[in-house]
Image 1 (tube, protein in one colour):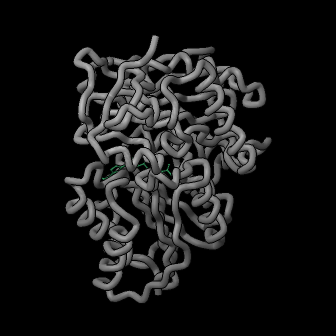
Image 2 (cartoon, rainbow, N blue to C red):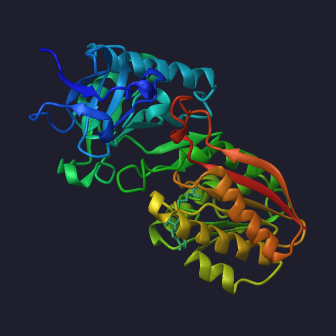
Length: 394
Ligand code: SAH
C-alpha cells in the first residue's frame, strides 16, 4: 500500500532539496483529512515530484523526513541507519574495553529525526521524541539486535516525558527486549551507576564526556566545586585528576545519592569528596570568597523554548556573575548552557557581561560543544545545543 501524500506550496520544496528534514505546517498546500499522528507519509512538491518520506505529526513541524528522494521506507531502513550510526561510533573510537557508554543515535544528526538511543554496556535506552518513532519503537529495537558487534542484549524504551503530550500516546517505560541486567557503565575507565529506570533523560548525560575528560586535566591540586552535579560525572573525573577536594551540589536528593554512589564506586572512603543537597544559587551566595579555584556550572536548560530566551539569559548572567564574584584568583571556570534556543553567541554575551560586571580579568581557554557522538547534520544547524567555555579568572 502506498503512503498518503502531503503536497507542498510552490517554492516550499527548497529547504527539503537542501536536505533540511523538517516540513512546517505553513509550507503545506494539501494533505488528506484522514491522516493520523505518527503515520508514514510521502511529501511532494506542488507539481507532484517526490521529495521524501517521513513521519507525520500534528504541530508546527508537521513532517520529519527520514529519507529524501524516496516514496516509502524500505523494510531495512532502521537497520541501515543504525548500522551507519554504529560505524561512525566505531570510527570515533568510542567502543573500547574502558568505554562502553555513548550515544548511538542523535536524532537529526544521525538522519533519524525524533529518535535518541544511548548505549550503556549491553543495554540500549531508546527515546522517542515524535509519535512516528513511538510507533516504530519495536522496529528500532529489533534492528538494534541485528548489529552483532554492538552486543546489545536489553532494549529499554523510555519516552514517558519526551513525547508531545497532546498526542495522547500514553507511552509506558518498558523493556522491549531483555530486562535489567546490571547497570554499571564504563566511561573513559571510570565506572558509573546508570539509573535508566528512574533517572533524568536516558539516565546519564553522555554529552559531557569529552568536557569531563578536559576537566580532569585541570583538576590536579585544585579545590573543585561541581554545581548541578546530577550523577557526579564531573566530580568523579576531578577526583581521578588529583583534586585536593571536590564539593558536589544539587537540589535533588536523588541526584546527590547518585553522586555519592558513583564516588563510592570509584573512590571508596575517599575523604576528599562531599555532597550538598541544596539550591545552587543559595550555595553560591552563602559560600566564602576564594574557597574554590575550579568551578563547574552545568545547569539544566534555562530556556527550553524561544519564548524563554530573555529570562534564560538573565539566569546565565546571574549564575556566572556569582561564580566570578567568588572564584579564587587564578581559578578556572567551566561554564555551560544546554539550552537549544540560546545560541553560542547569546551565551557568550551573557557570560562576558557577567565577567565585565565583576571587574575580574577573564580569558577564554577553551570553547566547548557537544561531542562527536552527538553529531550535527550540516543541513540542520538546529541540532547544535551544548556550548561551554573554560575561563581563566584572575
Ligand atoms: N552536570 C550534570 C548534569 C546536570 S543536569 C552531569 O554532568 O551529568 C542538571 C541538574 O541540576 C539536575 O540534577 C537538577 O537536579 C539540578 N538542579 C536543577 N535546579 C537546581 C538548583 N536550583 N540548584 C541546584 N541544582 C539544581
